[in-house]
Image (cartoon, rainbow, N blue to C red; front, side):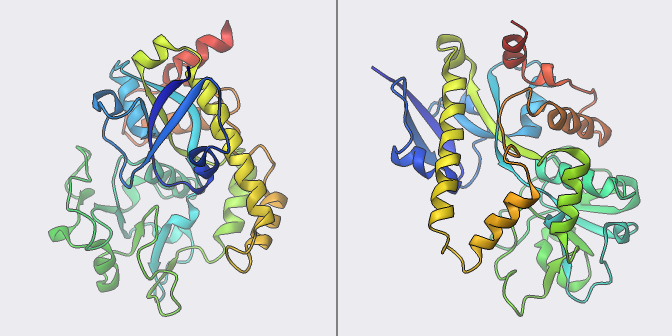
Length: 322
């Protein structure tokens, strides 16, 4: 009888074959709940055995010596971050170096994606000390919450003034740019007042890939430690299923490419610009990316100590050395 694995994930389209049962395993039955917001800690949630988690917050658990969650180095949320900095169409800001001396909003200081975005502008000479930072909600629809997460620093890193939505502050000139993983409603409309800072962010991202050799990972799967202890094979099994689901979904997308009028061109360009292994899973294949992220967490003072890939993923490190 297969093991039932209860899993909480965001609504990633490539998980469709897994959710529908087109991809399956005789050893495990996957029950997926699609969640809009990541659950806070799968170790304390009786509803799930594993869940999508923030890479940054997982790293904090590892630093704290908290072994209640075991991370699987299958990065189910990956993406370049150059596209994630927006400004107004009337803004003078056209390149990352223009961000020096400006007021920048972020949707959460510790967030993995914003950590990678700060890493991208740091490569262009703009560090944390070179701008004024405000953490806040993107739009009126987003909840007011503590988005500084203990990293506030008066005069450098503060909460958004009056907890006003950052899109309003951007329109009014209270902010010069905003880091956001997801674009605000209406962003893609022709009459939107906003644009990405980089007009050709795609070229910048391809160049970045050639320099670093990876697409940044933001989220991974975290398992309750007791599940892994009882069923040591479970992480590899789920990782293989996710990889198979992604492969099947890409094949279907290539066949049914009418989702948008030019999806077929996007698929062609992606295949030309990136190697087929750009989203490969596993510790060894992602070791440089993991190491670079740990470096950023340390350099940006999110973590007080530099963690190694082996410390972040000890289960997989032991297995690779056995």
